[in-house]
Length: 225
Image (cartoon, rainbow, N blue to C red; front, side, top):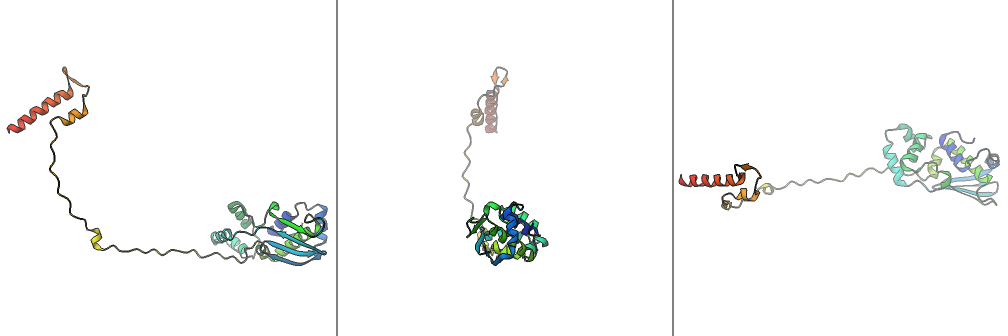
């Protein structure tokens, strides 16, 4: 296996899934033939045994890297990986599960090209993958550079200024209340009539009829007084 650290091993395996294949075996033999290897955002290129080889992938969106950088401030191991000083399985785990954007791209997300007749499914691509895996072991920031995140820094959160205006004293003063109109007396037994028959019998009469006669007598008594 080429690559010792987790990032290096993941990268080599993503590019060359079958390490026991003849392509992988020939690729390992050609590692010393990898020349002019350059890792830029999204593109890894080199000359391998006279062939021009590239391994490409869509860079990590800046918004994802910025959010991840902010959330990892209290995790020294992840911070070291974000700064390119270490290879972190935890960082790879966070990016894969939380953002569905692994730091090491999946096999289907890689674009492999070679100027040879096999056009990408060849030992030249395998040699570049193994050479780059060794480079990641020497300098983890090489992977960050290829993923396009080595120069992205977390932006400081912008806190909007809140201006509280003091209301003038007169804003809390209420206006004068309008004069109340005289209450209109309800007709005698109006509530009872609105409710209708109660269904309760007092002798042969409904309770409402009995109460209405009682109210009439109360009204007469009050007028006499």
